[in-house]
Image (tube, rainbow, N blue to C red):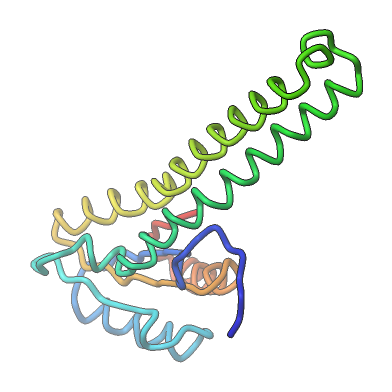
Length: 177
């Protein structure tokens, strides 16, 4: 069993969508992406403007998003505590009067505030602001009658490969960071 320490709980957390005018064009692009790049059939999907549940097709990993929320809060909360204790150590070593005279209280205070800051960052990471732009722009294109070819890449290199392929064919894309 492989133990990972990723903040994200999604398997395919790099998203890219290509806007197409017709279903035939979308099918051709999807087939070409699977044959010309390292993307598999399960990573490329076509969304029709009349499809129900467009949001779940743009972001298919509901369980992964839940795992992202849990992991990001745990890891970034712990990192915040460590950062707070590191700052406490630096200030204690520098002899700051408040810290030097109240070592236990100051240490606890820095750990708590660092942990809260880490938890807040975990919440921001869970919101995935980069995915919000990808989903809203894709949904807007679907509402206008376009077809979308969605690419769910394993890593940034695979996403860049797909984006380069689409760019050479002058196809408009939306992506997450």
